[in-house]
Structures are given as structure tokens and as C-alpha cells.
Image 1 (cartoon, rainbow, N blue to C red):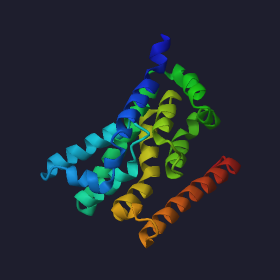
Image 2 (spheres, rainbow, N blue to C red):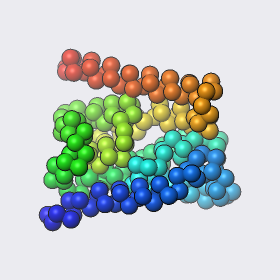
Image 3 (cartoon, rainbow, N blue to C red):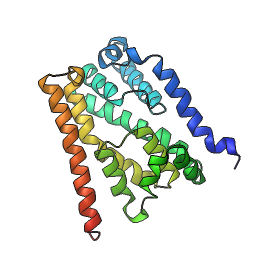
Amino acid sequence: MKKWQVWLPFFVLLLAAAGAWSFRRQLTAEAIAARSPEQLGAAVCFLLALYAVKSLSVAFPLSALEAAGGLLFPLPAALAVNLCGVAIVQTLPYLLGQRDQGGLAAITARYPRLAGLGRPDPRHSGRTVFLLRLGGASPGDLISLYLGAAGVPWRTYLTGGLLGSLPRVVSATLLGSALWKIGGTQFWLSLGTGAALTALALGLWRFWQTHPAH
């Protein structure tokens, strides 16, 4: 495989991040909702398209899209759209990484902290993905790229990823724009929820490390 092909995923992420950075002041839940089409179907497509852009850019805040979904749609529909969006976010970088599993060495060379994850145990790869998403491992796009290159099966990857992401998606959808109202009750509730989920993921990881039969 040619060297440029190994590094192509990084160039794609870099270009997308640069494009998103130039519009960073407009990437708030309120701004996204204000620019959304009024028709329901068009609004869904608009938000999902933004999720696709976010999947290739670590500079695009995922929580802003989830909160915008909460502002645009009634709760059941908002959760459904946001979960579809998260599936897109987790899928595209995964596919970039999966295109050649030999690129795993290039990924860890470019981002050394990812090397600490190691190659997931095939017997427990779904558990690994679940804990990474539940704990809010960041940046999520690079985690997706890494897991694709590590050879985690698609069905296992997406199932574990969506289950682990679900609590944070629900939280962001319910709290909406309150996520950025620093000092408010809902703001601290959001921070507390995120910290609790991270602690839970860490606790589960330690339990499964010491009780491998479970």
C-alpha cells in the first residue's frame, strides 16, 4: 500500500477540522436551529448532514448538534434523529480506519496516546467500544478511526458504540442550550452526569479487568 494512502484519513480529518474551525462561532445549538429549514423532513436531512460533517472534524462540537436536535424536534423524534446522527458520526471515521488495518501503526505514530488502548481483544471488543463511548473518550472521531483500523467488526462496533453513547445523547438532547449556560442548574447537572458516566465506565473497566469471566 502506498504511503499516501495510509495517511489519507489524517488529511481528510485535518481538512474537515480546518473548515469547521472557520465557522466555529456559528456552531452553537441556537445558531444551528435558527438556520434549519422549517419543513420537518428538510430539517432532519439538514441536521444529519451536519452530523456527517462533524464525523470528519474533531473541531465540530457533537453536543451542539445533539442540543440542536432537542430544540428542533419533540423529544421522541429528537432522540431518534440524534441517535441516527451519532451512528453517522461513529461510522464514517470507522470506515476510513477500516479501509486498511495496516494503517493502525500510522495512527498510533501520529497520535501516540491512542497506542495505550492496544488492539481490542476480539472476545471483548464490543465491551471495549461500549466503555470508550460511555466514558466519553475523546476525541471521539480519532477513537472511531482507531477502532476501524484495529479490525473491530462493524456490527459489534456500532452496537457497543450506540449503547455507550445513549446516556450522553439523552442528556444533551434534554438539556439543549442549557449546556452552555455556565453556572445554571442544568449546566452543573450536565457536568455531573458526564462525570458520573465517566466514573461508571472506569469502574466497569476495573471490574471486568479483575473478573475476566464476567
